[in-house]
Image (tube, rainbow, N blue to C red; front, side, top):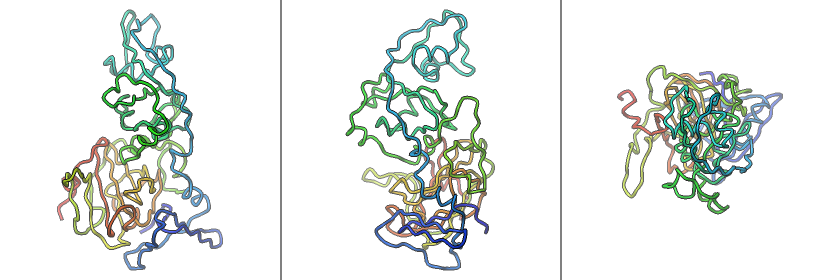
Length: 362
């Protein structure tokens, strides 16, 4: 099978050059060498050019644009609409976000307003989104879980922020999100910041200027891992297939002791090819979520996302278009896995669903 992605192995970092080609080996698990055995199942290691190498060792997209925590405090109140007003103009005048004003006043697109109408403008701290900022980076700057910012502002797929958009920031108490208070201190920011799969799906895209379109996905790796916002599928075309076959080690749902498995875990020999479960676009490929080690997220449209964790090597990059059955990596025990396996999730509108209900019978 032909690969079009950058091939990455999670172990000690090694960079091998030969003529104009290089082989990429990315660092993920320093404790031991987990090189897969050279079996007939193991896909050949890919060679690529230096531009892919630079992308492969670069930080994730949400760390490439720093965020200045310069939120502005807005007192809010009641605003009476005047002739010629627009929702965007009211937001700019009050220093609040037009989207949150629409939400709290139950306004639906195209957000028609009329003179004399009274609108509630929520008070709180508002961050004005700058070029290239991502939701995850904004959440990190303020020490607020990105999932709370998503809920508070009513953000929806495709979760691409607009330059100049004002996001209402949550307060210290989750039950008080409607009226945010003061900014958290440094210790509170550090304790609050944590990245999950849902955060990457909803907060990993860089902001775009008004009227600008997201970059189209490509099969060419030289452009795939850029800092641009990537256009994701709008419609899910087809059904899911098994990403690999093996013994089910853990099913979906509650496991006792407060533990919950948001997917399924499939035992597979190290080096088993991991296949894309359906057509889609890679929205993430990396190892920033320690528990999952090598992780790939694929967006399929209509809010459907699949996740593939504990990979020993990743063969795709962000922004790459993939087909159902395409090899996206090989299985391993990276992250917190006790043995070689694949952690597989299916999510609909960020919510995990039981993969078995959406996969063909064995």
